[in-house]
Image (cartoon, rainbow, N blue to C red):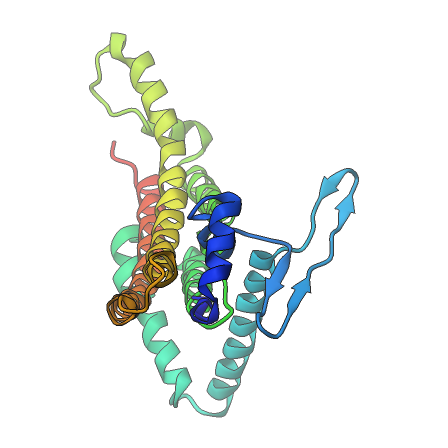
Length: 280
């Protein structure tokens, strides 16, 4: 969450409102961009890169995804070294062991069942990556990469590939697609059911992407809107109420960051389990 908004003057907000609608300044802090706004210290312009006619420029959300990946690499390398010295974890290593065991015993095992070990590394990776991206959006000058539909759609696509490939490896290609249609369905319903089940394969990753994107975007918009009331109404009398509610939503966002990482991981695991162990 970018708390530098508290230092914005009423004239700045009003100018943004006149230039592109009252919500333009809010969307400026929510949407992706090619610059890092570190006001009042300055603005860092990110490089534009074009390759074979494609725009692969580095953006704000890409920077924070890299930062999330770097944080996780450093943390887990340090955790791995701790286990080399002693089998008894200490400090942060103990905390991460608790989370790993939780994902293994409360998400992967119950939803996937036998064979969950093959998918546990992916589930752990996606859980910690989403959680880190969510939390980075709550620090000053931070940005939430998971509030970008392209990021959540990519994560959902990776889960989709794990679901399909896992199901085909377990049941065979023909067996997997055959198992999508329940047994005992009347012959005349088979064409309709086949279309419905095929569409169902794609609605699952769509739901994963939209749910994460919408929840991570909504909280930030509410916080910015509450703070913006001070400047939009041109009075500081609403400041105590606005800031109090904004802080409450901010604390709630800490919980939402964890819940959304859990839900994405749990649903991905559930869909993998459904693909592996089809009802016959």
